[in-house]
Length: 294
Image (spheres, rainbow, N blue to C red):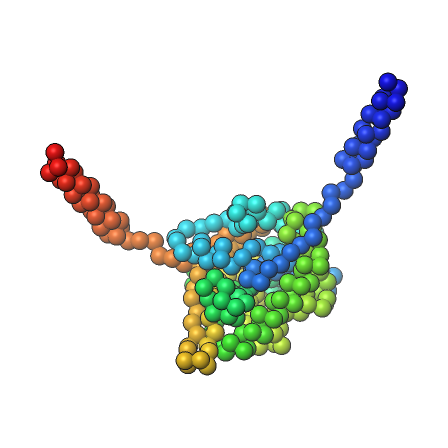
């Protein structure tokens, strides 16, 4: 009996230690076709970068197919959510005022926290051509669409695909933070970091700058609006011209709510009326057939 008491006490002690021990941080993973949400503060050498994988582009493509808005922070990964990544942003970018603060008291717009979203296909993912890019462009004036990104050759867009893969490789070497199991910090000048590639003349040829503009009505992260484009490359085969599709907009507020709003048009009232008329006609036809059978 005494031995049993000692054993029970030992097990309880081990359990207590386990409860007190810090929670292990999960190793991050990245798959080609995932979208990255990245942050940097260009004028602040004391701040690093912050990167978070918000899931496969197919998730946003499915949202873009129908009108409406979705909170990606709580709805990503099938409802698992992105965690409290606003707390991570506060840690990295000068406290809870990260959304509106400028670095080190510098009020110039170029030193505000900036963010963007990017992804690319490898092969014919999601039924799209290889090296199709998904990129954001900031709206300088809220409510006015930004200039759509011009498609380029598949070979040039493949440089972006490769750069994103390198970014994903660094991301996958990190562990989730205490606030988000999908977020990662990195040094501002680390090899393959967000700042290294976004924007980068080497990888994006300047035409692929994806961050919000550093001037204009939307400077700062609060209520910034970024247009989200699907950019299918030009190909020499069959002289195919690429295409750019406006899928919708991303907005971000200071509480860390990332909202995607589809660009799909809401049906006109007349369309609803026609649908209703069609349904009523079908119902009437079915009733007629039933009456004829009886």
